[in-house]
Length: 146
Image (cartoon, helix red, strand yellow):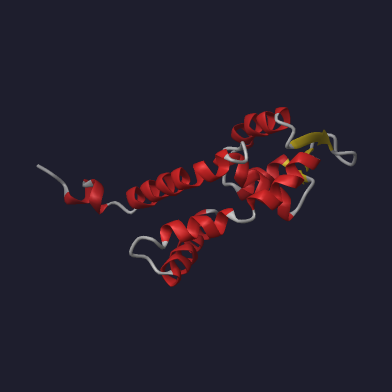
């Protein structure tokens, strides 16, 4: 006996999951030109907004555990995008700093959001739909993050 509530098409989580994966896939060719991955792009956007953040703050903004973000930051450090240093005030804290290379990528990355939106608008979506969707997802994220 099939339970309708267990059908994939009846789940809230699946369209969110699938849309996330497909949008990330659309980003990748744009990010390949910069030599970075989508998770690295997210970290860079956080640091472009406010440099010298503790690892915990970056993880919290990305809704990730610190043990998940540490290997990502290590790879970014090896690429010369960021530098990790112990806080002088509290040695338990590790701060993440943008390097010159990481800072310079910001200008190259600036057109990416608009390029992605343009790609999405080629479908049946309007700009207002995307804004409304982002707003609704933000409400869900804020609620579930508490």
